[in-house]
Length: 501
Ligand code: NAD
Image 1: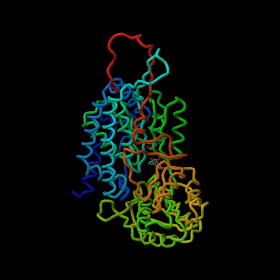
Image 2 (image 1 turned 45 degrees about the horizontal axis):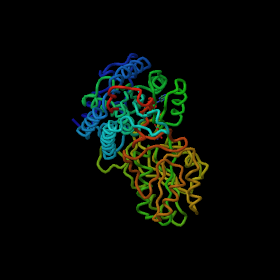
Image 3 (image 1 turned 180 degrees about the vertical axis):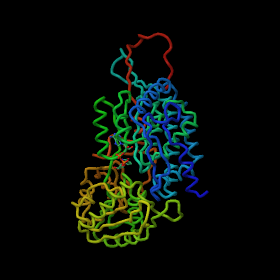
Image 4 (image 1 turned 90 degrees about the vertical axis):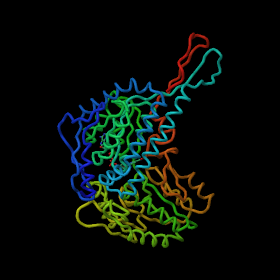
């Protein structure tokens, strides 16, 4: 059996809904095809859930919450570490499943799996600390009262995720939600549900009690919308497009739910004339072509200081034309297909528009012809600033360069967008690096660094890119409520409850 066939047979092993600890068919009796973007073949069919399935899953999560919220942080940490081990044990299978369903090269998929393991381990550590933090006394200007603050699990949470880094975006929500003591209904993207279904299987094997995690596959309107609207859901954590995020926020407003949103981006990389050109070339190419450019954090706007603009463009042109696009399972392939036909068509429209919009130079790489959603990596030099390619999120392997003359001009151009997710600065001058980072309206700034993300730090942006932050302690706080308890001093007798989350 060839690798692809073996994977396809294994991929199809988890295709049902996971509700209250059981794998089950949906109420509506409909199924959705899952496509391999490298071949355009259907590799599995998953349940197309509906509002009745969502209701069933939310009620299961609400029942499980009564006991799960009373577990100690240490108990939850044991399970989070077991999940991390389970993911690590099935590392190669998960990476291959991610490549098969999303189209990213196997080496990139392996990075995703490592990120998932690190995220569950990190939040296991934070869960353990919760027991120590427990309830903390607050200094108040009164001897009459004793005030304490404690953090509690928010309740049943809805996690809605996209298709570009399926397991990673899920882990960034799921690990802190479980660590906090929340129970979960997860809605994977209908385009890439297979990695999450496998993750749910690992979580079930790890011994997480029934109802704590529920997974409902299906479309946005049929599963995502009723989930965001459900009155028993306390909070929605959403990653996806700005248009759908706006809709989710409006829906959540009807029942005053908390929302965390991780949305689109249109980020810049600023290359100053003193930069190491080899490093700058690597950082620009990585920021634009990793995951075939399907990154909310893509630094697809390149702002380059005029004296080195032609030299950088020449190096990038060479990189673009030498990028190996093809089967994500083939060694040496640097870029796979886009993940869906819709995304392929959207990016092709942008490239056609870019050619019409009058860039000084257009450089195209190679991509396989025939079946598969393969797109040529493409670079536009001196793209007019009013072009949609300069202003809108493309979500594909398309890079636009513009030159600048002063630091202020570069900062102004980078901030001239409705988004504010990330930015990269390339310079040898420490003072300038810090100065520019201070001025950029972005949630993450990398200086001379690739887009490395550690779970201990933070993720999210300014303006229309985000509401809230994921990762770090912020990611945990997003799934917690705060409760203060005020008692007249000496008014209670008997032993007090011990600390515990
Ligand atoms: P999308 O908004 O189309 O879909 C995201 C999820 O929302 C999917 O699961 C979808 O089924 C669901 N959904 C669709 N309609 C819904 C509705 N009415 N109510 C509730 N849920 C609904 O996004 P996508 O195309 O899957 O992903 C690409 C987008 O995600 C890009 O804009 C990208 O920038 C963004 N993204 C952001 C981050 C970040 O961290 N900021 C990370 C990854 C992706």
